[in-house]
Amino acid sequence: ITMLRDAARAGTTARYSGTQFSTSWGPRGASAMLAQVEHDPGTGTRYRVVGGGPTEATIGDISDPSLVEFIVAGYDVEIAGTGTVAGRGATVIDLRRGDGTLAARLWTDSEAGLLLRREVYDEGAKLVRASGFLDIDLQPGAAADPSSMSVTVSTARGTQTAQVPSGPTLPARLGTSMRLLGSSRMTVDEAEVTHLLYTDGLSSVSVFYQRGSLDDEKLDGFDRRTIGETSFYVAQDEP
Image 1 (cartoon, rainbow, N blue to C red):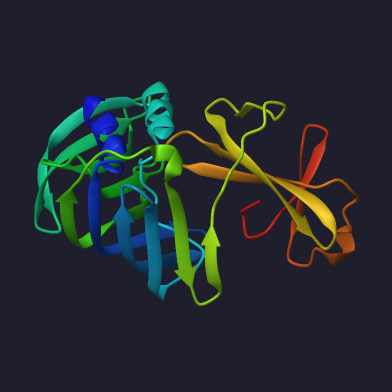
Image 2 (tube, helix red, strand yellow):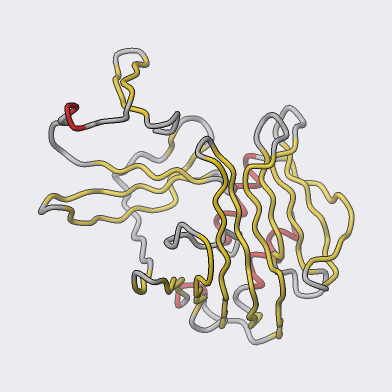
């Protein structure tokens, strides 16, 4: 647990740059992204996507200390051994579910504590997401205020800077494990849409809420399903 917290703090003390990959596997097949990353403890992280897609994605980490607390609350943490990532020595940390199955494997830098690689597994021990550094130039630095840091993604579609305010009136949990991390509001076709982001520290779920009525005649390719008294629509087994 201490190593996880050290990994979260590393983003406020270390300056680094390098190449990161991110790959995920799902019902629609595999998707991958390659990005150049530059991180300054005073200003935050900038990604420049150089290959693959989706272009809006960034490579997940645990640089937010609150995510560490979500992980500790939901998983058993144990040291699995040592390894090497991008030529740097690393400590391997396993995160296990209550039934003992492997949920994730993390590689943290042995010297700086920075998260170097992450693998996430489903309940059947199948690898579903992997991300990490292919190369990295890591330099220690003075601690910075985490509240002053931001994440910026540069892609062919422009530059996006994420700012997620929290709201106390929003549902605090989604199911039994997902807890609210933050929310934002946007305008789509002159209608207000609320985006709620939930996480258990490893995975995240985005919920978009908009008042109105659904025109199901325009939902080509979606299947209607029902749980209890609630109906919803699914595309290729993904809501």
